[in-house]
Image (cartoon, rainbow, N blue to C red):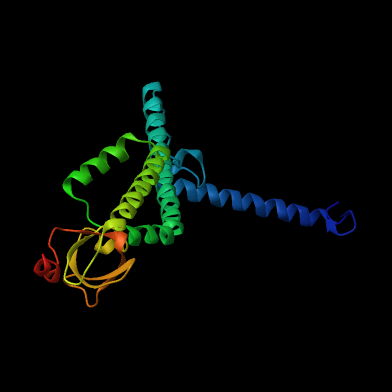
Length: 216
């Protein structure tokens, strides 16, 4: 019987030897496990630490902590995203902002009274109202300057105050060094060359030209 064949390749003797070898390996593993501390075979559940059971209160505290950590992480991600977005927007707007800042730097300095009026207007008026007011003020200044220029006769040596033209010089006083029918050149302290202006862009400060004073 032991020499009979099962199938075409495996004999009963080979099966018996394989079974015996498997039994020996099992016995060796059992002996090895018995020799280890606690006498438990390798891989048995006895050597695995038992996970402690949590009470309902402990589970609730664990869940709260986990939710808080998730919320904090989400808030940090949102903050970082908002900062990146703001940086991108600032970078895109920078060229336009630079132009605005340069234009602001060229504006004449306001007096204390004018600055108070400006603050009141910008705080209490809408953008449309402020724009309309600016147009009316420009028209008023232009009309007033034209009326002044009609009867204003400038002569060399007269002291004048600049009221228009280049914003850098508005409000400054200087001396007329050349006068024409509708234009004049005013020497302003601190400038390398006379400032070119329309006669409607200056007003006399009360000082008369030396020649005019002598003629009087």
